[in-house]
Length: 264
Image (cartoon, rainbow, N blue to C red):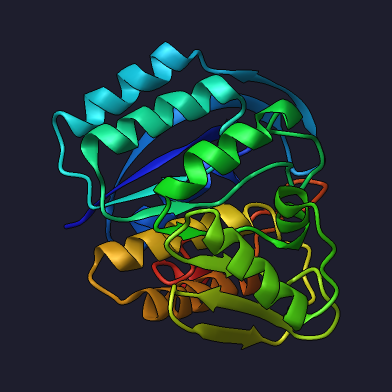
């Protein structure tokens, strides 16, 4: 069994963050571990408030995992402030995990900022160069680069810019453009395109978290990066299609639709 670690915020409603990551790891047959960076009071409708975990506590959690358990892949989600980023960067430099998939969570699907604006510079300079894969959506990419993305040509140019900031590979999710959803992967050598028909659904809570953790899990299991992205998108599509009617806002997905097909 492969061991996957998520470094992210906690979503008390269970649809995103640490909870979504651990569900994804389990659904794909991996052993999941977690380092909590932020405690977020949110539900399917909104983010109410959040509290950043102290950097020394983040560091202690990271040491607890890495000094005892083999880590085959790391997924990074919410890093609320520069202190959290320094703690995570120090651990990545110390323990040198090979697979580090980072979903740069700046705001929540339900609304609300989850990363301090003042921390963007620390993220760009301190975290991106340590990532084997960066997985921003279009709004996150625009914030990181200070650009405007309107088409696939813009996405490719942005992917090259983020690659130039030090990430080994970049996957920009194109779901915010009109038409079919097309994600563009630049693996450091060439571009790969992944297109799926847009799903008309309200079950979109935690999609970014789930995709990035699924990519990390599939890479940990030995798949190449393009194949891991393809498999992860296939899994995510099914989870969205089997969305759960839970909550009054953006519903969560069914991470275990493959294990319990009878409840669909």
